[in-house]
Amino acid sequence: MRPPQVCAFLPSVDLAGRAVALSADIPTIFDQPLASHHKLIGRWVAEREETARAFTRAAARRHIERVFDAAVMEILSSIDCVDLRIAVLGSEEEASPAIAIICESLGQIDLGWIEASNAPTSWRATAYRALEEKLGRVLPIFGYDDLFNQISMYYWDGETEDEPARQSLIYHYGVDAEELDEMTLPSELNARRPDWMIAANAAPRRRLPAALRGKLNALDRAYQALAEIDPERNAWTFDYEIVCDYIPGIEECSSLPPLTLVPFGHFTRELDEVARHGMEMGFMDIAGLCPLSDASQIDDWFTSLRLGAQFLACVQDLIQFDPTKSGGRHVRP
Amino acid sequence: MARENRPALVAANRKPLREWIEADDGDTTCSALPASSAQAQTLHAGIALGPNEGSNEAREALAPPAGLRLPPLG
Image 1 (cartoon, chains in turn red, green):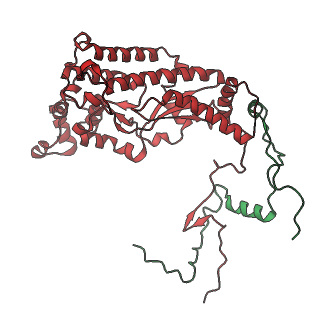
Image 2 (tube, rainbow over the protein chains, first blue to last red):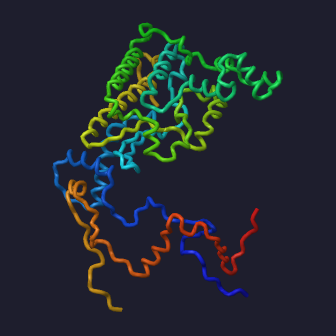
């Protein structure tokens, strides 16, 4: 019988053959001084409060988080067409903290009556076109043109017409004539779009019912207000290089946004194909990332957050509206 | 066993929010943290490995406890 062995390993560090070590991110003692991003938001909180209430350090940290979260929720709570999360980020590079808007929703956005009603095609196409043109201003979302371009790069070597696409399939993949008949070509992909997806079917505003026209005009105004935000304080924009500085590892994610306006029912295979990398590694789900060096800039950030929420409220209003109902009543969920 | 006659934990420091933000040096001498015994400190040092420590060593497999029968792999 072998003598009992003295374990060569330190306790808790080698469980079932796997080395376990504490991450450098875990503080070695609890209750460290507030980090730079807590301090930045904390200054903004302190300016809003008259009271000189005394806190423990941990309670001060929680208080800062609660006040900020409440202010964010007050603005975003009415938005239910998409789940958004706000994160205040520190930087490893001693740069300013930043506030990020992250999109937690995945897949096709619910198009309501635009996709599933008997309203005239021209009304549906006009509303869909408005969303295609404008929604990308605040949400990480792709439309049919992006899907077509991705598929074109995947299968047709960037070609967009049938004959060059067919030649590219033969050249690169050695597809014979019989197999080619089973391959999707650009015209076949385009032909699968329902009529309401085609911009040419959109109607001039004056031919729309007044209630629908009103919704679209409200959307236009909210969109225009977004264009007037100071780019330095805009909650809804980001620079990819800066995102990489604040969120290490995001380079591994797909460059594809997580949301789409393309109806899954018509393009299931293609959407699955282009989204595969994102499903495995994550999507580019940042809606905005704004570095802020001074607490005095946070009110401006909130102003732009509110303008984005108002724009999304107009989007919801358009999607939940059913112009075929008399008087333009809203559809009950 | 005789216990040392001192409070286990000192009440945490309380300050206005501004002071935690503008004038918090980290309380390096903070008495609110209980002192660890030498035995506990040795254990903590054992758990917290350095980034390269131990990762390249050829290690001997742990012997399974007597009486534990593992199913064959695969």
